[in-house]
Length: 100
Image (cartoon, rainbow, N blue to C red; front, side, top):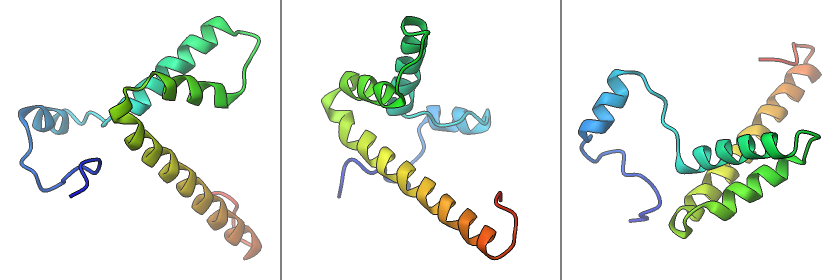
């Protein structure tokens, strides 16, 4: 079994139940690190910066054990964006709206 992939069939912890009951979104360590890096850069570089700088700073600060999961999230996000773009272009080519 790949230990970097959650086992959705494991029993829920008390924390999982509370998060679900209160409809709290799941935030991964990668998301939290990205948000923190963005906040820091907005405060220290008000003149602007490249978006890649956020990702690199966040990734560098992740514990080694979390970097594989973060890369998986990045790859999935890239793929999702690509699929959304393709679907929007197909709708536009078919004469439909460019937004879903």
